[in-house]
Each structure stands twice: as structure tokens, then as C-alpha cells.
Length: 302
Ligand code: PXG
Image (cartoon, rainbow, N blue to C red; front, side, top):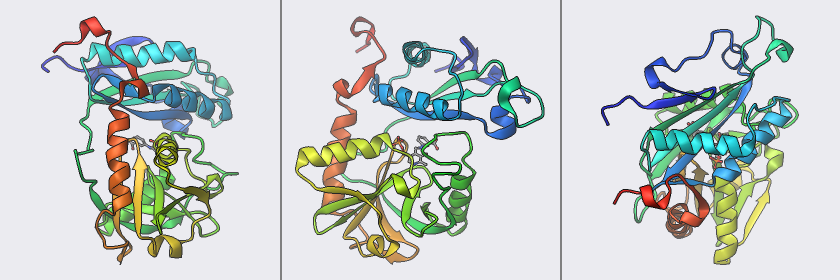
């Protein structure tokens, strides 16, 4: 594609190199804003309605009034993809508090900033096998639910960034954060599952997790497949001694966890339940019924 990709900024489509926000935007000054990371698979935006709902829930909790109705936001996402001719894409949808003064108080920020970045991104889901990653336990604890809770998908990602840097520094792919009590919470930008004796477990809301859309889909896939899933407190001991563990998120899709801080999980390779869910999830994301179609049928090129 020769033409520069376009970014939606406050209702206008702007060339990527010219897409900017003010240095007085509180999204930049204070991390005051919310976002979503979304994928499109073959012209269908996976679970777009769920992402839009979560965005508006995050905004509600920080008392940020999104200047578009949900259907207008949906149209803006689809139009950005169309204008960029993208079928397999990553979508970053951001709403910031907007410009204000040099003070943390947001009341002077009158107009929230909305921008939508789309880029080509092919799925990492291969036809058969999930990728295996090595992770560590981070020394940073997940933010608490009565603090800067990750239930809010806010622009404040320092907690995850510190953990991710720690992982990179240790030569690992990612880090799992524990919550303030010492229970397993989540990885930097994905949720955690374990499999023991054929049953799955995943940390519950109490552990300060983001309510992942991939996590929710895996739980419903498990129920369809007749697999049991418990949402509960998980100790590091339980995770270390699991038969299998995997990470789930929009960007990660499904990644098998081979080891955590040097302890092999199961055989250290992707286990049978992880592989099965990987295949099923792969099918789900490509099912047009699970997505919001970007292109009208007549405009789809062969
Ligand atoms: N936990 C956290 C803290 C996240 O940020 C997930 C779990 C998984 O949620 P979903 O709804 O995606 O299944 C996330 C998701 C990025 C990026 O560019 C981050 C996420 C999603 C997409 C892209 O870093 N975070």
C-alpha cells in the first residue's frame, strides 16, 4: 500500500504522520483516558460490540463522557478500516480527557479526544500449534481493585510496563503479576489460565484482572466443549504444578506457557487442552457471526 494509512482523530481522517494530539491533552499529561485493543480477522472485527461496551464502561468509571454514541463509535471504527483497506488488522481505539491546564483536575478539559489507529496485523494463530512462551513472576504486584484497577482499561499502564520490562531484562517473553495478597493475577496484557487434571482455572475479579474478552470467550468455549472452568483464587504453587498453562488476550490470542521463572509447566510444551482450545478459538475468531463486518458483501474483492 503506497498511500499513507489514515488515522481517525476527532471525526477527521488524517494521514498517520500528521495525526497528533496536544501536549496539553490529559491523556498524555496524566494517563487520563481509556482505550481498547481490537482485532479484525478477514474483514470482521472480532467482538467489536463487547470492546465498545467495555470502553464505555471504563469511561463511565472515570466519569469521562464519550462524545459519540456507541453506534457512531462502531461506525468510526469500521470506516477507519475501510478507508485503509484493511481486512486483517489491529485497531487501537482511544478516548482521552482532552486538553486542559497543568493540573490533575479534569474539570477544565471540555472536549475528550477520540482517535482510532488501525494497522495491518496478521493473526499469530497458526493452523495447528500455539506458540510457547517463557514467562517470569514479576516483583511488581497488580494494582488493587480499590486503586488504579485494571478493570478500567485506562491509559495508565505503568504497572504492566514495569512488569514487561522486568521480563525483557530477564530474557523472558512476559511476566505474570501477583495481586496484593500473593495470588496470581494476570500477565502484562493477557489473562492466565491453568489446566489441572482436565479442569481449567483462571483468576477471578478479586485478583485485579482486566475482564478480558478473550478470557470470556474461552470460558464460553469450555462450556461448549464440556470442559470445567473455575474462576477463583489461584496460588503460584498451583500454577507452577499445573499440567498446562496459557495466556489469552486480543494481541496474544492463545500462548502456551512453557515455564515460569525457570519452572517448567507440565512438559514445557503446549498441552492437549491448550491445543484444543487454540484450534477452537482459531475457528471462533474467523466465524463471521462473531464479528462485525467491515465491508458490505458487494464491495468485498475476491
Ligand atoms: N489483561 C490486561 C491488563 C490487558 O491489557 C488483557 C488482559 C486481555 O484482554 P482482551 O480483552 O484483549 O482479551 C489485556 C488486553 C497492546 C494490547 O497493544 C493490549 C491489550 C489488548 C490488545 C493490545 O498492548 N490488552
